Length: 481
Ligand SMILES: Cc1ncc(COP(=O)(O)O)c(C=O)c1O
Image 1 (cartoon, protein in one colour):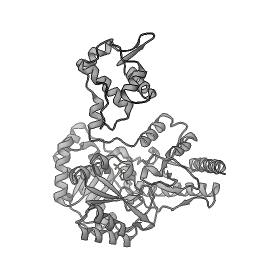
Image 2 (spheres, protein in one colour; image 1 turned 180 degrees about the vertical axis):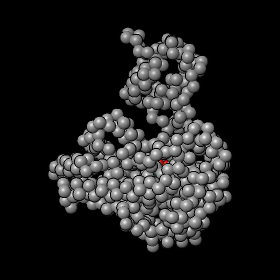
Image 3 (cartoon, rainbow, N blue to C red; image 1 turned 60 degrees about the horizontal axis):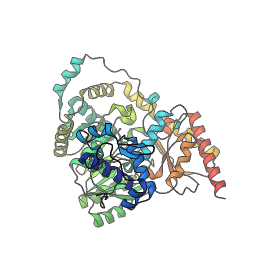
């Protein structure tokens, strides 16, 4: 039967590919057997001939079939034995599995950056650039002394590091936590992953700021969660919208990045923080406070207390060293009630046997050096300079044309452009001009807004970025005149 599966969500040409591969695997199509002509296949499947051609091209590329001049398309005899006897249909597993890969645009940005780093200006990658990572010395220990440290480790992580985090939380934010309330994670990302996998179930509704970095992650979709957007004003999320969402969809958890929010740079006001924790406590919705940037306040800026300090019980707090020491450090932490920490630690142990001892010992040593504070101050100073280079450059080339909020810290500038982009493909114009930025649609919004990561731009680069944006704005205006 040459019939496609009517309930499949795959594109038609891939359904044809699957059908032909299945026929070969079942032995319905034999080595060197001739396939029906393209026109006939098209009419059997009820599709355009071009769809059949695309499917046959794919099968030819996989060496499943061969096209022979004069004799039509036949099943590849060499491939057939392998195919029918041993090969696994990985496509089936890949499409059925629960994991959703990163959005293609994000992957494309990563690839373009890697392959063309010499000519591309990177204002997209949200990672600390190498020259801004600490030059602090790490302890030189024998392999055995590292391994010996495992005596001080349990499922929740390396004890001395948990004590250091405890001390840091007290000094930086006045937070009183005990080590058993701290789980060391492989970056903030693992903390988010453990929360979505272990504390929520598929179909649960969660509320997320709009725009938000979380839209660019696949872990919410992979956990089968329903995501609802929380609109923001200049003080943070609008609380009445959260109440509405709760009543309509029974929101189970709220994910907030209240300080130097990625992508907007916004700091949620103290008043709004208080309202948020009050409403969530009343509705019994736990809050996840994702806070990788708050140590990066521009010098002398006063940042409101963390949500965690306003409600120690109902807030799960996530911190990270990624933006201070480099994201490949892979050290983050989750602070929550001891029972939750214990449960997530056990779940993590089931998944990967716990964290490597090496980054934990090294991070602990570096966090306890006197020079660490000097590094942090220098980082704040450089970020402040880079923010101002970018803003000055943009204001010089496009005075009063762009709308943005001057962030009091963090890595990013969120800029509304005075252009009329009609589709997401229009954002390709930046890469064509050798500039990588993050378009707003990756963060869940439709307007023509871009995130520029100033952390990666010195003065010269900031000027170049501004010139490219000016060129794009002018060309777009001319085009629409
Ligand atoms: C708001 C926010 N949360 C979490 C992360 C992930 O951090 P980590 O590298 O610690 O996993 C990032 C990284 O850009 C971020 O911007």
